[in-house]
Image (tube, rainbow, N blue to C red; front, side):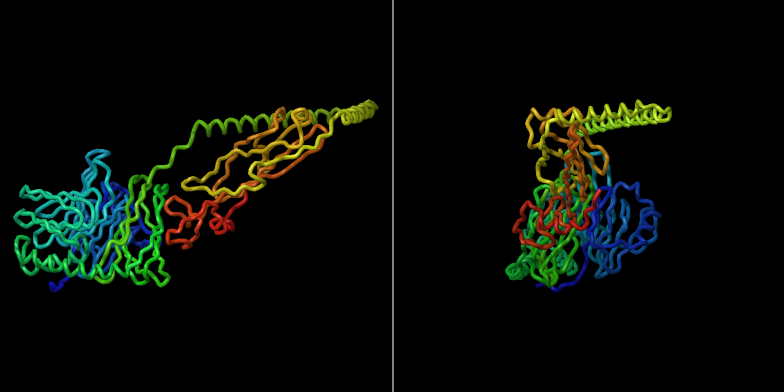
Length: 554
């Protein structure tokens, strides 16, 4: 076993404009002012600082001044980061990728944007190592790691790239990386392989099960400190001995790790996801470069976010560790897809129908009000003139009404609501509005009795939603919309020609408990219930109980 000396590895990178961060961290207020004053908004690439430990410094492009790197800062192209002993920093990229700068590292970012589809982000590792977990990149986009002797092109994988004593090391836990040396030699690295490019450009590829781990990156630094290079027999033997010993200890560790993940939906509709699992207390769980020690409850949980427009496959590899031993204990996979486009034509038709209905109801109400006003004015004028005609006409009107009542057929009509008086609707994200048809029918009468109905009106908060004055049907559908986490009530009224009115109320409760979501897929099991992947039913009863106190009545 080779004696251990800590040398560093480093990391940093960036891909696009916006970045993700986990919910529980709060940015340093000084960071906001720093980012504004340094005006990095026009940068080709940006990465957000998610973690800083120890002595970690930042040098902005075109300056010689070094300042402390802080949580929440934005790092752009040509910026340089260096870390001291026992220091590190984690960077987040907009698509959900992460880069981890380890101790004693020196790294510079750069970028080229050839057109809207072809981008290249470059991370120059002057010294140290870059631990990376890069999401699968779209065609035309790559993340390149460069040193003085070679370049590694990455389009979605996990591992590390290091520059140690003038030599480049590319080591993978998973994925595929192409390496080109300045001497014109090329090579490919796959899972559980470590490729080393010497100062002369010669390539050495080793099959090591510890490939991609932080422990191997430190061991490689120690081997080179002892003066051995990749062409040395002692070099390969030293790494093989380390790998054999490491694998034995890792197998023992794997036996005691119990990781039960709550599965993700196949499709994510929101640019975030909450990862949950039951794990042995005390185990360190690392996802996207951010580590958490599992508490006594045995519940691991972390929420990650990414840019709204970073659509495509999402992979979240989980590393479980204890000391320097780590294993790949799980990988969550899903696909972030854009929301389906609303049916604009249908929505327009609904809006137009509703507008026409309201206009007709308002016109009828205005006409009735005008007639009532004219009658009142006429009666007042007749009374002022001392005429008896008003009394005679009133008697005639009473007689006419009495005759009408005698000829009006007595009907026993009632309202039947489809779905019951109250409907509870869970709204899946990212929707914020529930659109449906309020459906009801007239019961207790036949088609022959419809002529006894004067009107059917639907109101919301006292305002007419739709009115039917020429009633000719027994069933009705009225387009309605209700905002998320809202209780909406619709009053339905039937007016008979006899003067009788029948009323009822339809109530919608539209809800969504956002804290209970897994990246766009709502769960019935609130908080940690069934976190072991037992599944959830579709009633959303528990979720409703958690959110019902927050619903507002419109």
